Image (cartoon, rainbow, N blue to C red):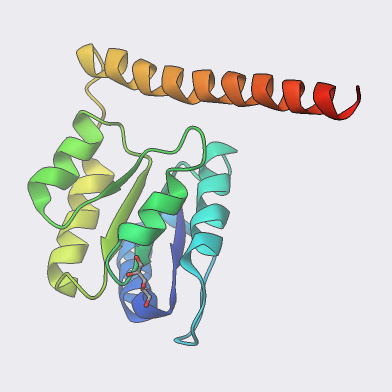
Length: 164
Ligand code: RB5
């Protein structure tokens, strides 16, 4: 399994630890940066990693910022991404079993690095349970699809008005 990694400046150190850990476990990684502590904007890295996951270049992704919140919000704007913010082992396990989370997010300013690596372990080793949970994920996909169709409809009306 290939894992996409992305982070902002606040999580550069944690990303280095997570990357070394994931590679030591035998996973291939694609590190989309950032590669130092110079200030950057987390949505850029959420986009790189989310795109790699939905396009299939990487099976899953790990995104890190100061809190794990902003980078997760940004990743979840990409249709098909299910990014889960997990700062405990139970949430990490459930995010795979119930939500089939394809991106794990964590906050370097929130979590102890040792716990972060344990969360990575459980998140990488837990499978989706399917069944009733798949029905719920299908409903999430329906929301994505419906919003896209509605927006396309609104855009069509605007373009029509402009060309009257
Ligand atoms: C950067 O200062 C910080 O806002 C960012 O890492 C993250 O915590 C945003 O959610």
